[in-house]
Image (tube, rainbow, N blue to C red; front, side, top):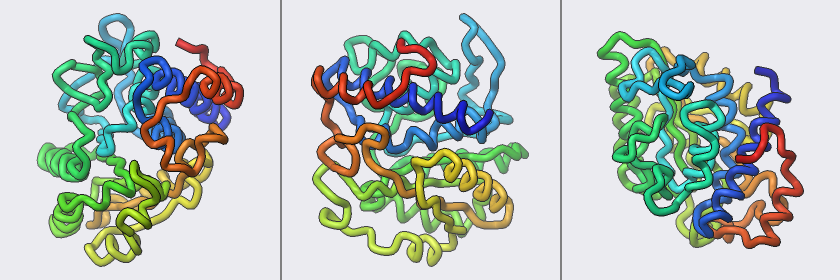
Amino acid sequence: MQTKELQDIASQVRRDIVRMVHGCKSGHPGGSLGCTDLLVALYFQQMKVSNRKGKGGYISFKMNGADEDLFFLSNGHISPVFYSVLARKGYFGVEELATFRKINSRLQGHPTTHEHLPGIRVASGSLGQGLSVAIGAALAKKLDGDDKLVYCLMGDGEQQEGQIWEAAQFAPHHKVDNLIAVIDLNGQQIDGATKDVMSNRDLKAKYKAFGWNVMEIANGNDMDAVIAGLRKAKRLTGKGQPVMILMKTEMGAGVDFMMGSHKWHGVAPNDEQLAAALAQLPETLGDY
């Protein structure tokens, strides 16, 4: 799939995000918009996932993910982007996005597994846990002789969690070199800038010291840069070290009045703000 096609999908996903959060008057648009380009690039180009159709014409989902690349969303509060990408990829109907965070919906505020939503392999949103889960899945693939990769996305505020650093020490020691982790460096968290709440200081130096192969994507909201970064990361796998991508993004990317502010971490747009956001995001695949 070419860059323009991926950009068109990303524009539609961003429309989905702001409409979903507006529809239930709750959710996390800022980080979702910032990570849209990454998830679109992963699911529509870079990851090797099943395209086999099952019941209803949707992708036939296997919970064990055998012979597939796996993705784990650690910062589960950015579920709007995850749900939209899964629906647009064909795991379930896009019309279901209208049920986001509503009673009896499978699309909870944080992804869950008890609702059996295709594409979701672990409940997430209790920050700090996703990297550990991804490492376990990567080790399982090694034991099974499965040569596919495991991806994990974390937030930069999430790096303040202690469990992250236990996992960060474990993966290099056990040479988990089929793992690509990504940290979304938007510099914002719910209470303010990460540098003010609790500075992460030099994450590159920290992960290198722990034994990771660390690389950077300077602009995680540029599709070409994201694709180039993911391709480089894949070339670094299988060399005895886990791979860490430090990816700089803008919270709220694509919607000018949401960009760069922690205030849009977990606030839904009102009717007027929704209209202003949608005016900036071309409808490319059709709204749900």
